[in-house]
Image (cartoon, rainbow, N blue to C red; front, side, top):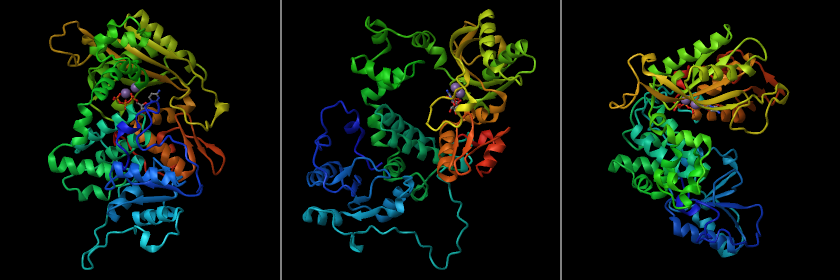
Length: 500
Ligand code: CTP
Ligand code: MN
Ligand code: MN
């Protein structure tokens, strides 16, 4: 957003930044934490002013967060600055001093933070309606995806695709805040009922700041964004994107390979010092197949196969299609299922049994099985965990063409009569079903906002296992997704409205 360009904050291991961030200077004013807004000020001036302030004992934060007490901008328009600040999700925004550069120069001259006067303030401006106009009932867009309806139709792909490139690029550089900022803004755009045609339409949206608005402005004006083009032609970005497209290769491994000079798959596969783990080996082996989208017909066929296997094992088991296909998507990168049985404890051995059957049927190409580590007495979990504790497996299955209505989604010249498909299975205990279903239905952005909403607006903790009310100090029971929405005081959203 108002940040230094990514290249400057890529890695701590790089040589010290030009603005001397890493040089230790004695802090004189502990209670004052500055944040300098880069947009309009420019990168080199921001670096210069940062260094100046730090040399005088001021704390200058690189990233805007709740610790910041003074936001300083130069030549910024009050409206767009405040729009951005409001989208930054700061809990203490009302107590932050939002200041013009004059406060900063006064303070530098005095060698201490001067008292804030009215002339220093960038006043919060609320757009005023012309007196005679009838106020139209404004449909306010929520900053939380769980308070927006987002179906599979996206009228703003031209913008959201650009945002995804930026988000990914920040993700590769481990700049989490910026990455999320672009994902949140993209998510807001996905919920709109039509394409954005004028800049004014996004200026009042939540989660939009100067950086995101700037990108929209470029695309509206020139048809594309120069910043995005630059990333797309960047060798590191291209290589990271290529390497992480392999099943089993995350950003850490991709980065390591990139740093050792590798640029292509053949570089990796011919390098004797590289040892691929079984997941990565399978990833390369079935690369063509598993990087090809899975169709809805294929997902339904896999549903039948899994259903058959599950019922042969325990007749009263339940298979539920979840993930993107439950949200109504036509294509996905995998197919996700929840399998449960009403018999307590049986869910722990269900997946190994299913896996055995797949093996016998000769359709198991790869299996990463993770046994359950779920323990009711550990609820609620107070620390954030990326994965839930239920038994689960990440599979690659061999799907035959004759099982799929209308045939496989494979290349025209492909006459093998089968394809490899990624399948995820999760097996929670029955009494956790609603939480698991809500968590595995996604989208990822929807889940993130649901948890954020629960935490910030309701003082509750939500994860794939449970919902905990911190005010009442108790776990809240739920047998359906509707129960969970009700506990959170949210209007119920159908799965196909959760494509945030
Ligand atoms: N999920 C999870 N724990 C995991 C893996 C996935 O809770 N270990 C959840 C994710 O948060 C997501 C859902 O399962 O909400 C589906 O994940 P995924 O298959 O990655 O995404 P989809 O939305 O199904 O998208 P796609 O169609 O590309 O598969
Ligand atoms: Mn999926
Ligand atoms: Mn999945």
